[in-house]
Length: 589
Ligand code: ASP
Image (cartoon, rainbow, N blue to C red; front, top):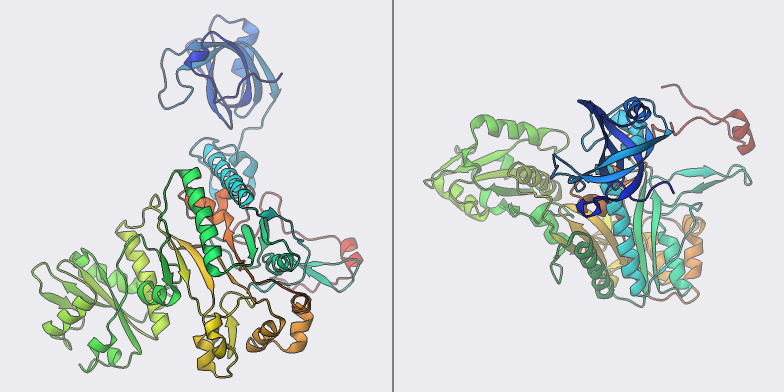
């Protein structure tokens, strides 16, 4: 037997027992004649001690131990002289009678402790060493727990976990596909699924009315902290349901997750907000509702005063930053530069300071008198001590910028506490989104999303304004400014699906080529159905109070989509290319 206990297990109650532990040497140090060893495994750390008067061979082995050596150690559990209240095993230590070195280790390139001295790149290269650190172990343990809870919950509700293939044909989630060449079909390629969307719908046609899968999805997108080229979804679909059924089921799933994993109660029922309200008041379809500071339209209040910038603007909006009237000129200038950065994209920033005595100071004093400013401040719900910030331009774009500014100010004021959870559903999304550049509609969610039945009349109209009015029974689960999941009630009728492709400018041939299989399937009694998918990595990161999903994935990729540990992607040899009948035409950088 390699071990009788783990390194996180022994307590004062075990005093006097003979035990055997196995693990990694985090640290070995000599103190007086004694040698102390911190032995670590994923359960914790236990202190081992070799007394000064121990047999010489034992003292010698103990002294020879290096960091990350793997050892087996036998001895007696004794009470520690100097207890360590910070360690669960801190009341005891093991007085050793034997040490067996199971494996030696090269000196690791960084410290493997709660806090490491290794930079991100170095730790990525030696990810297996980083994985020995407690923060990563906690992250992966949380991930396991979340997956386990999801499976328990959905199983109890009659859902079946069914796997769908990875080597498929393009799925329309709006990102770029990763493709895989087919040796047996030269010149042809599989696409890796951006999601199992079409397959889960086909499972509904197949009669599996409650499906789920914790599944890997692949999207070739530019990466950010919360994105990975391969990520995991909790993918779900149900038949014979309406929006209410889907929302009810998954609200309960999230409630039970938060309760069982974090012991956090989330509101019942969950608040809901229409997409339109989210855009108007928060400038985002994933509003962070942990704090107010909402956006107020002040367009009618600023007209007719001769200030051309606002006069000409399609939309003028404001937020009121509580207590920020104290901002100095320098701070306001800095903020103005901040909103002008390309990431925000504003042309400038107007401010109105509401002084403690109720008087005003603004950057537009020349055009607006105290009464005008008072009216604007009132519309923005600003009181004495607050700072009103105003942006103008095209409606949605400006709301979006105000939304970004709102988040920034919320962050600066410490209003975005990661320990506070404010989930809600965003509902009533527009079905379609017009793109000026390409001059065509795109599906806001994806092309399988059904229009609301009461909006079908507009869906069959040829007028752009009509099509823009069509809403979908689509919904997103939003938490603290992050979209954690989303889905919709689907089209289950072949003709409506064909109409959808037509609206999206996908001709009948292209539709047949790309999605013929699903249109076909809809001719064989497709049941009404709908579902959603949650971003599993993101749920884990948020529950763990982190912004980045990277630590919640055992082997993530870096910002360039590389796995620097295994050095991938990499070139393949000429014979492989030949087999695939592929010739490269790679331009040098
Ligand atoms: N397949 C969708 C997605 O990945 C989710 C859904 O509609 O169920 O976003």
